Image (cartoon, rainbow, N blue to C red; front, side, top):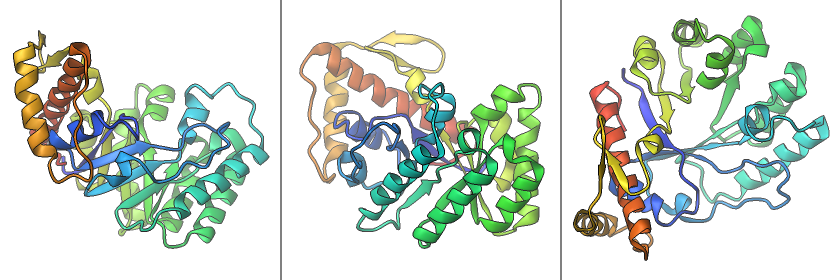
Length: 291
């Protein structure tokens, strides 16, 4: 496994969690920053997530939530999706620089249909030709759609949750095959595996998968507890104080000051996040990934 792993799952403006993630050693970060279609406010690239000195950051369009998450039951129209994409474009244009960012495209295949999703994809590339968009392939695109996507795009993604849901018996074999096929079609293509850093999946992808992402660190974390990978141990306040000092030291030089939470429960939760990220980075290193 050689793919670069991105940590995912923290709120964009959480000034307690983000410094902890960074202090724990994370340098690549995936943020779902543009999630809800009903929001009429154009979210701006402000807040701690965008001020952090990440080596690189992937920003998700949030369309996955509308297809499979909490918004999946809503009856969206093509006009809704076009308006959503217009706001996403406006959001991206507010960045002073996009050199350290990649943006997951508005992959609306399961909402608008494949043909209209392709139209939207071409439009956003035309509007922002210098942006590194990650174009996501979905099952409705089919084999021909995958072929076309690889021919037209230099950066694509394959989503694990969708394939795991609809092809539970074969997704572990399908995704590595798709990665190899993509490189056969376009040798210069970059591939992101969305939603998994499992060695059972990423390992067989070999050098064909460039990046992947993981939110599993958040499942290791328990309120007031820390995971050592096998069992949960309570965190004493003595341990909390020790690691607060470590985090404060490692947070020096960041564009903001690390702030301590006030209550014991809040302080324990902060340290549990620190341990969780450290554990996840150690796991990724053991399976051959890097952060």
